[in-house]
Length: 436
Image (cartoon, rainbow, N blue to C red):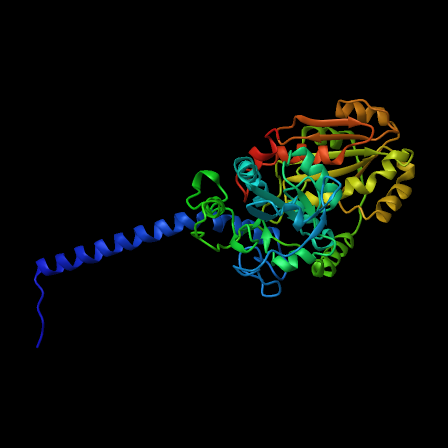
């Protein structure tokens, strides 16, 4: 028996399928909107973190299981940025204890700093204690992973960062042994653990559901704190933490191998003419730049120029610190670092030898004439030739930093970061241009 459909029936079927398609598309768009920010953030983290455990901050790492809900708070005795050791028992009077795993380098962590301050300010008078722990081991963190930071992951660096950003909560260091992080199963920065007055874990995971404050819909941390203060069950006990993976010491061999690979590249020294110097000053070098997240052959970059000389003792003693800054941004951000020797061309062999000894794989130039004054005129600035001199030029060709004498590398990095555009982590430009 053959079924026959009238044109009206076909129209009805078409309308039904169209409505279903529209409904499905709407549902998909809602899901995409909800996950868009986390997807963008994870994409950035994936580019930033190439370790075998990439994504550890999003998906639980079986090697470091997370402390289960209901478990007792692990004990700790850790040094803080205040010069004191902090123990779990120091917070025995707190009605609620919030333990947050924090870091210096992570852009997601930076995006949450203001929200942590708000939580601390809003609840400390209600008997809530907030304690931050940095579990990252410096040797487990590749230098390029510092691309969004001014500082590495050391206790001394933590002190600088806490002072600069005015942290009003304890900031403790667990990076040397990572014993506390292992007890907690800290997956990422940030990763939050909230304990009740009996010090039983009642919430673990992200602070909220979106890196962008304007798009937050679920306030996991504050909802949990409010519930505990009210003697009520926590509405959500677990969420997937969002951030940069914990930098475990076990990753150190891989980090050293990556650094050795970078430093194994041939060190070159090119002679610079007056015209080359003029191009440098205009920040229009046309030097090829290859970043993890950007590839181009004539990029507009932040250009840092280190004028130095073999006759300058301070230049030589501080050379490696300057190289470290270059390593932080050279393959990841729109940044070019140039070492420009003011020594006479007859000393080029000695200049090259020094650069090779210090594994200077960035752009190395030397004046092609003994008349260094003419190069100063070409650059448009004068300085003592046997003293350190650093100039940084923005993407628009304007000088954004210049210093004769010893350079504060942290200050230099902050200025560079303030002139990098937003890429995978919107809000970075505003963050580095904000006053703490």
